[in-house]
Length: 215
Image 1 (cartoon, rainbow, N blue to C red):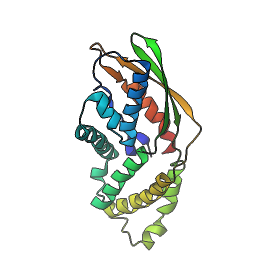
Image 2: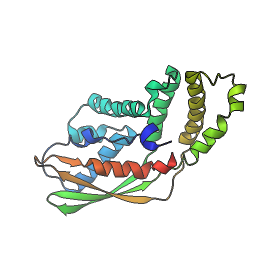
Image 3: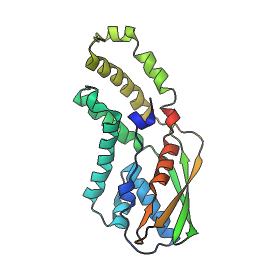
Image 4: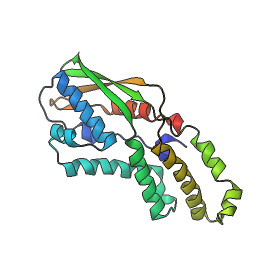
């Protein structure tokens, strides 16, 4: 299973570009970065709203839209899954994203009013070996015992994805992590003086927290 298929990166590029104009102190840059990560992964919007002058409704709408994008990229709309199972996966993705493990370090001046920040990340390893576990759970014998018509593609998909959901839900509920690593992000102003975190930095963070090899 490829991460960029079933579990797309949660890139909050739009959110990172909404910060108000004006110079930042190092403390401001650290606080701003913390607010972006907390809004992106934890669904915690208070500080993000302060920085961006947006409303809670707007912040939640952006957060939810990213989950919807994840579902679309996963291809759930063409799998023929039940509404209940689809909703279960949507909640699973939300729960998984909130397991992101990171610690935002102090901001350091990098010239041109920009800052670098080291973020210590522990990679989520809960899905290591997931494919093998799913394969073992969806044998022809298991399908037969569940009275699944494997010639019915929708029924077969429902069976496989239900089994996978059960395995994944257990792992998200009891997350495991690998050794910590450091990702350096940049908080910098654009030509209009609006501070943001570049999308490539957010991608690097996402890849570090949820490695592709874990899927």
